[in-house]
Length: 110
Image (tube, rainbow, N blue to C red):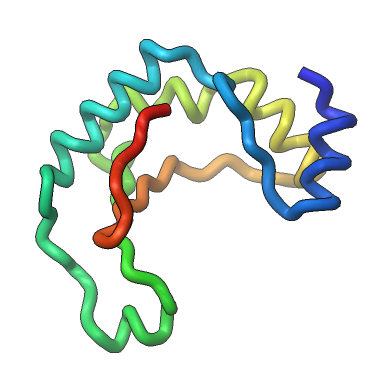
């Protein structure tokens, strides 16, 4: 992983596309956990006021708050930490993972 190049891309584009960054087995397991949590058509939990202010139509989930250990592997991923440090600097702090389910989108393959 060339963090210097990735940092330049992020500064230029404002985002990064990281193909195959996590191993396939992990992505498949997390995909299954996400579908298990949300199902095919999850109950929508936000008010119209929230949606208007947020300008979004997603349902957030914080799996680590529910002791979902599978998501710890993302949080503990060395390359992700290295890249995050390069992008945000040494003062960044880890927070729990957040999964966002879009009512209008579809769940794709990792």
